[in-house]
Length: 114
Image 1: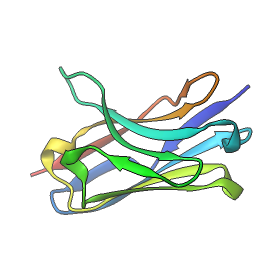
Image 2 (image 1 turned 60 degrees about the vertical axis):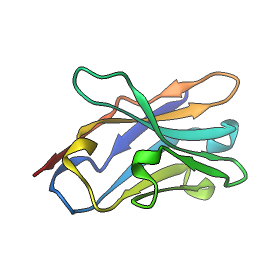
Image 3 (image 1 turned 90 degrees about the horizontal axis):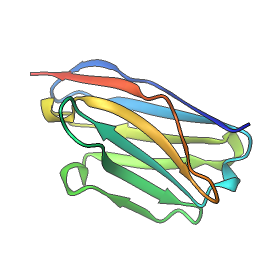
Image 4 (image 1 turned 90 degrees about the vertical axis):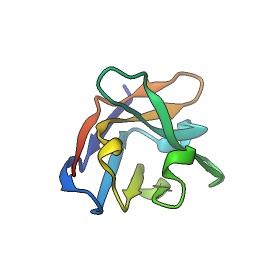
């Protein structure tokens, strides 16, 4: 059974950085695309960044230039480097594997204080 497990969340001051990791049990190659999504309290879940198996990336406008998504197929992992964090980045961040069947991780809390 495939599982996605996120880690790396926490509390950081505005302007700081965090690096989120998503470990995939099984083969990450089974997913065409890996993505990071976030959901803030009272808001709908939104796409943060996605990366295809070929390395093509796309980002939400709100994080362009600050966040970087990457994947390491050998380690079956996806990462989200978040720099210049803002209070509005506060949310639960979840990893998603998109393939014949989509899988979600349980999420990790990111809190940015002003």
